[in-house]
Length: 365
Ligand code: DAH
Image (cartoon, rainbow, N blue to C red; front, side, top):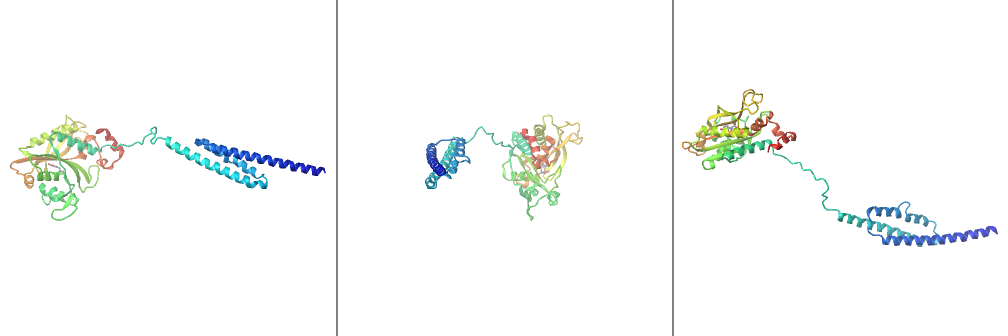
């Protein structure tokens, strides 16, 4: 009897408990649904905290699912649906809150963040050969010279024939010249900028006063003193009554502008097919000022250019009356002038483009 009564009591107690659970659960679900519906404008951190609180391992909705296991079978259908709706509502609310927080953050973010350090643009500088070429041009412009240019790929006529080179002259040889085509007037890479003299005399009105900067090509082995590509500046002055003294004065003034006002020049007789007489010009050594050092090899002098009075044959070949007009010409290697100016011992530095070398000249502009 006792037993029966006890079990009846237990049954009643269990039923009460289930009823109570049902009410608790329904209330909890409704409260959570109401809370979720009212949520808006949360920050990203708050959204994450909410997700953990509701759907995390120990979250409130997760706990309700655990509790669901104890729900009486006849109530499972109702509560199962309710819980699923709750979970779905929480999940989609969290997604919605997240995307509106993201778009708000994107809107508030300035398009350009001015506080970030900028990208460093490594500015280049002029190449030393360009610096010297520009300086040579600038000096001669001051003396009234114009700048003329001609093609790098030339014909034999402009590079040799019109400049009075005899057919057997060694400079025409395959060993010196890069030929592009063979034949009667072969096409080649110019070996000097003297070819621009010819083109200028053919087409410019007299008097002519020009400097011609440009690249030249010679079939030479590359060494500290020679390269197969280098730069020259040619000069040409043709007018009535131009003399050797005019040439000497022009070159002296140039040398002083380039190497300093104390610079002296000397002229040594030389030979070029296109000038007569011809000379090579030395400047007093800008390191030892004539006393003799290892740069000038103890001589006190440094060779800078070749020059001479334009040969009458050259004037006539381009249709200029050599009885009326005379002129002088000169030609210098830009790398050589640059080497002397900055005491660079190896010509190859100018072609290797090693930034450590190039940066040395940044301030020389
Ligand atoms: N063209 C000569 C050379 O490349 C340099 C030169 C010498 C040019 C004498 C001249 C000149 O105009 O008169 O070596």
